[in-house]
Image (spheres, rainbow, N blue to C red):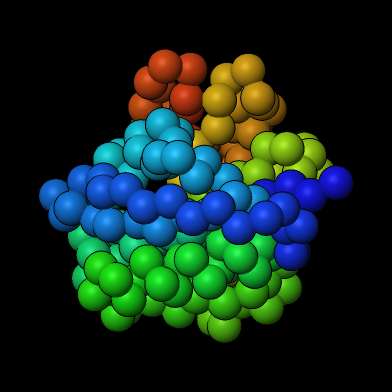
Length: 202
């Protein structure tokens, strides 16, 4: 059985294109079967993109874990003018993300395959963002949350979107355990934007 979190989805290609405004830019996206939310930008990603604010962050790159065909990473690269590293296990999604970066003239991105943090290119990020693959299971989602801490700069943030009915309360609890803080920045139609800051330990 093929899922959007498979390395190589075994479903026939069925390309689609649509325009969508994110962070004040009109993006043109190409999507395909076998990727998450191919018909339009899913509501959770939209809420995360709208809510994310980089002005308080330390200098440094942003990491988008489970980037799919690229809406979060590309829009944040555009809006923040920072380097955004975008990783996923789905090779089809990664090919689309690269194409979408090119089609929208977004050059400050590093898009490549990585199972969560296994092959990330940097040690410390100013921010990690994720619309985690809920269907991959709680273990995967909580690994994204728990390992984020070691990959963040001091004062760096982890920001995720998760539906209440798909585990937002337990995700918040997990983030609170790891970071000592976990703030719900926004609630919108059952989607929670939860953020933790890596506070200085000195």
